[in-house]
Image (cartoon, rainbow over all chains, first blue to last red; front, side, top):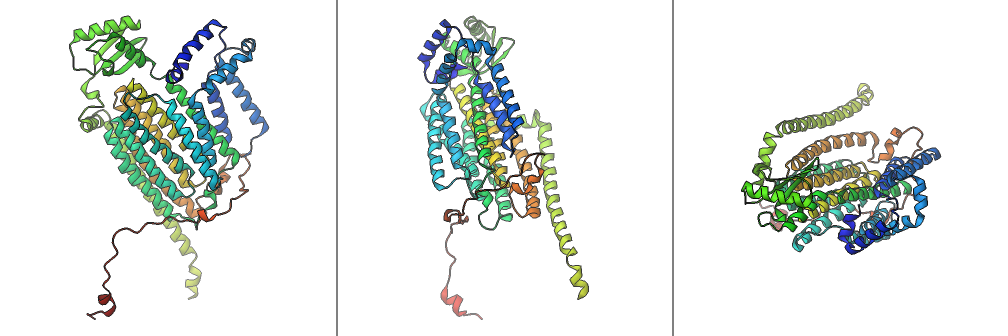
Length: 395
Length: 147
C-alpha cells in the first residue's frame, strides 16, 4: 500500500519508517480503502434522500464501524493496546500525501463552484481547483521524457478543467459546449495513447453528433429566460455529500491503481539488473501471472528462441518465479504502424457478432426515438382535435 | 517504467472524469445537464479502457470503447426523445417536478433560499456574426431600375 506513494515522494523516509515500524510492535494497518469504501456507501445512500431518519443514520454508522474494524484486520483490543499514538502517526503519514490534499482542495473547489454559489464563490472555487490540480500533478508518477509529460498534462488539464466547468455552469448551453471541449481533450488523450480511430470517433460521433443533439433539445425545451433550477441544486447537504462521495471514489481508485503494476515493475527492475542487450526493459510489453508463473511478452527484433530461453532462465533466477518469455504476436500489437487495418481486422473477425448487434441496437434506437416523437405529435393532435369540436359544430 | 506511469496517469484521469460526472449527476437538477454528466462518466470509463488496452497490448480495450460510443449514441437519442416528452408534459426541464417518484418516507424537496437573478445571469447565448455582410447596392435596391 505504501510503496507507490513513497516511491513518488519520500523514498528515503519510507525505508526509515519501515525499519522503525518493524522494530516496534507492528500497529494494526488501517487500510484507507475500507474507510473510503464505507464512507462512500454511506454517502451515496444518503445523498438523494431528503430526510435521513435517525435509525438509518445509526444503522449506517454501525455498518461503517464494522467495515472499519474488518479493514483494520485486527480486533478492537489490539488497536487499544497498540495505543492511539500509532494511529496518529499513520494519520500524519496520510497528511503528507499530495493526493489527499488534491482531493481536499478539489472537493472544496467543486463545493464552491456548484450551483447555490454567488459569483465570488465561483472565483474562489476556481482558485481552489487550480491548487488541487497542482497537488494532483505532484502526486502522479512521471513519464520518462519531459516533452511527453508536458503534452499529456496539457491534454489532461484541458479535459479536467472542461469537466469541472461542464458540471458547474448555470446555463445548459454553456455546459454542453464545455462538454464538447472536454471531449476534445479526451480525444487528444486517445491520440496520445495511439488509438487513432477512437480519437476521431470521439470527435465525430460524440462531439459532432451527440452534443449537437443535446443542443437541439435545449433549443426545443428552452425555458423562458434563465431558469431558477439551474442556479439551484438539491440543497446544501446533498451537494456536500455528493462532492465527498466523488472524492472518496477517486481515493478508492487511486489506492487500487497504486498496486496495479507490481508484477510489471518487478520484471522491469529485474531486466534492468540483467543488463542483457537482447532484453532491454523497454521491450517488455505484457506481464501476465497465472499461479505464480509469469508470462512475459516482449517486442524485440532479436527473435532467436535460445536467447529468449536464456534470458527467461536468468529472469527466473532473479525473480524466484518461473518465467516464460514469448514474442509479441503481430496481430496483438496495438501500436503497430497499420493500426487502423488491424483494428478493423479484429473488429470484423473476433468481434463480428458484437458489431452486428451494435448495428441492430442503433437501428432499434432510431426506430424507438422516432416512434416516441411521432406518438407525442399524435397526442398533441388528438388534444387539439378534442378541444375544437365545440366551435366547429356551432359554426 | 514509462508504461506503468502512463497507465497510472490515465487511470487516474479517467477516475477523476468519472467522479466529476458522478458528482454533477447527483447535484444538478436540469435533465439535460444531468445527462451530459452521464456521458462524462462514460468518457472516464473509455479512458480507463484504452489505457488498459495499451498496457496489456490487447485490442479488447479499444473494441469496448467503440461499442461504448455506439451505445452512448443510441442512449442519447432515446434519452433526448424522453426528455422532450417529459418537457411536453411538465413544461420544465426540472427534475424536481417529477419528485413524486421518490422513495416512500422521503420528504419532498422544497426550494428555500432561491438566489436572486443577478445581471450576470441575464445572459442568453448569442452567435457572433461571421462572414461578410451581404452586398447591398443602394441604388439597385432602393430605385428598382427593373420594375
